[in-house]
Length: 81
Image (cartoon, rainbow, N blue to C red; front, side, top):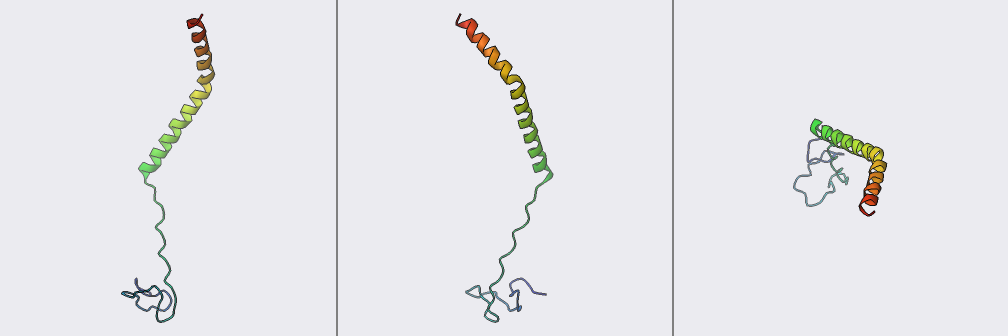
C-alpha cells in the first residue's frame, strides 16, 4: 500500500523534495481528485422551493397577463376619455 506523500508508482518518499518528479522512477505524482460535490437536504429543499415559486409566477403571469393588459387599457381609456 502506498502511503500519502510517497510516489504512486514506486513508493519512494517524496516529502521535502524541491520538485514534483520522483528521483527514483521519474514519475510525476497524480494530482489529488477533487471531492465529489455534496448537496445537503436543506440545499435541495431550497432549490425545490425556488423552482416552485418561479413555476407559479410564470403560470400566473401567463394566465393573468392578458387580463391585466386589458384592464390597464380600459383604465387608461377611462382616465384619458
